[in-house]
Image (tube, rainbow, N blue to C red; front, side):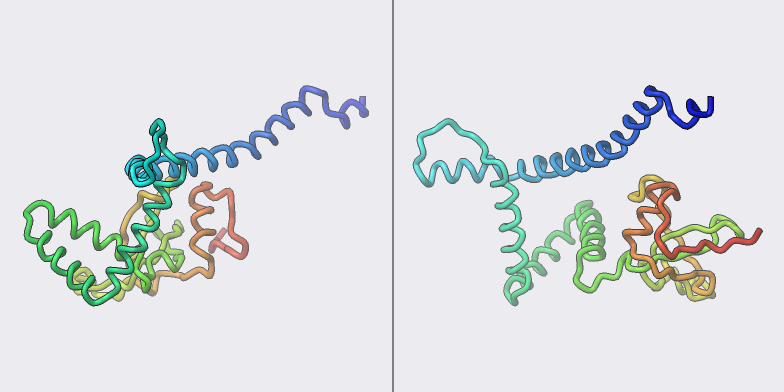
Amino acid sequence: MDGNKNNPSFGKKLRGYFAAGLLVLIPLVLTVYIVWQLFVGIDGLLNEYVTMAIIKALHIDTTHRNIPGLGLLALVILIVIVGFIARNYFGKKFISFGDYFVSRIPGVRQIYSTIQQISQAFLADKSDVFKKTALFQYPRKGIYSIGFITQDTKGWVQDSISEDTFSIFLPTTPNPTSGFLLFVPKKDVTILDIPVEEALKLIISGGTIIPQGLKIPYSG
């Protein structure tokens, strides 16, 4: 009897192997699938046009076929060229003129301005968006939440608040792309010495993956 208890049945071992296999394959397969879909989507933006241009330029008499990766390469080169132009004097003047022109188009200017501000916030060289992980009590005292400091609150929002505050993005679980914008008094915020990537793992996993060194205040 004791020997049977210490030796799991074949069916139980098989279920264990199956679960272990799923734990290995699910993240791997989903990662490959997502990366592939992103590649196909981005590559497809310019692939057909670039391939046709090469065929015509080289006078190749062949059935038209897309060359995988060519569209992505062309897009990267295009972005680098535009970035190079944007960094020189004449490029800056041209972009300023374009901004001025677009800002005069009703309806379009609001969309363009919003997207431009978000892009600058996340992509600018000096951007400090989501550089600090913060711990604070929300939605009430005694319950702790983890969010990301985007900046010291400025402008009319801070002018309307008697205390100095941080602008904090509080992501939702398990989808961190949605969340809430909170203005939290600095005295109520604890800045954690945890990389944003590690904090995101904690949020996405629903608390099952705890970053090393993280200690949530607790009073029993």
